Image 1 (cartoon, rainbow, N blue to C red):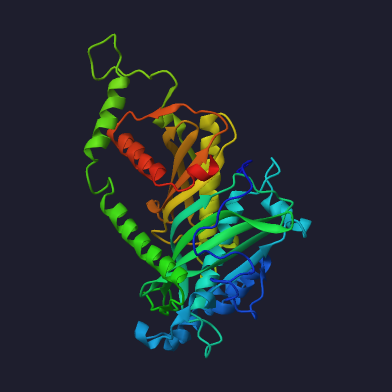
Image 2 (spheres, one colour; image 1 turned 30 degrees about the vertical axis):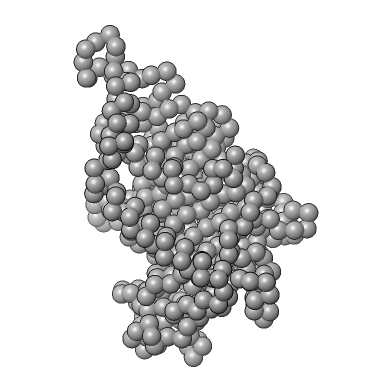
Amino acid sequence: MEEMGQSPRLCTLSKGLLAPSRGLTQGSQNPEERIFHINEVRAKLLEIVGVSTNWRDHVKAMEERKLLSSFLAESQKALPSRRMKDSYTEVLLPLGSQPELREKYLTVQNTVRFGRILEDLDSLGVLICYKHTKIHSAKMSPLSIVTALVDKIDMCKKSLSPEQDIKFSGHVSWVGKTSMEVKMQMFQLHDNEFFPVLSATFVMVARDSENKRPAFVNPLILESPEEEELFRQGELNKGRRVAFSSASLLKMAPTAEERTTIHDMFLSTLDPKTISFRSRVLPPNGVWMESSKLKSLDICHPQERNIFNRIFGGFLMRRAYELGWATACNFGGSRPFIVAVDDIMFQKPVEVGSLLFLSSQVCFTQENYIQVRVHSEVASLQDKEHMTTNVFHFTFMSEKEVPLVFPRTYGESMLYLDGQRHFSSMHSLETLK
């Protein structure tokens, strides 16, 4: 069972992020806005998009959405500007006050399933963007808003109690022409006060009513220095993602320091009894990377579809996380706790009826930290060709020190360096320590 463990109760809010029952600055939240119950989020999304809840009627419902194309703007300038607080949303997950909800979120260790939290964050991010782009003259939105990227999820508490209420809050913090960055936080009740336990940054993209081409989104008005800082951070995040992609090991050779790291690891695995590059032995407390793999297969049933009749991105994240957790548990020999989720790019939508192949392996370790990479591929029942849809990066912390992982091949060496890069980019290590 995947989970989060025991750690200090408090952590600080990121600068400018919203706390429950507060706006971007004190008192700026719209008093008319109510808090959504977690069960209302999907119903609200279905209402906004206007699609059918019956799978058999989905083709007809999507045809009806084509009529909404007349509401699409020809340029971003044609759209009214919005404030950050216009999209501010709070959602309550009342695990404490409504015990009947717990079963879905419960692990066997009596903690909260992080995979379920990923699903809720994904739905909340989409709802926030629909509030930002709301067209008051239209009953339904002409936009198809989908998750493009999970930029970062940082934990500042290892364990969540399944017997205390949880609250999510978030808002749009940056916009491009057709994309939006959403900042979200999660809080848990303790002594009648909500304390932050998680912060997340998602990037959403807007497409037309048929989900075929990009569509413009409303520009953002900045009303305070805090909001200006949030927007500036969104620009920096975009630049960082571009730089990280440009330096990808799929495009560029490793740095001199990284090449030295790999060569030193290679030399440490040579058998001292032979003068040969082919004779390899593991150092003490070492494990070959290839032995850390786990795989799974899912059939993507209609039950897991999103509001656009593709497979729900939150479901994909949950299944990948659960496999990643099992991989870390199997490797470390003790219960792992999630520390960070990093750089999940949704490269291709997953169609209902697809076969979902997930492959997970440990690619980097340090002390009691385990960096896990999960690769996602799909194939249709008719076509056996496999296509990559996602690559997931999870950082776990084990209860005890874990073995060092050693690559055998050049390809595994690149996975090791990629895992090291993702591990080094984490923000939450010091908080959890």
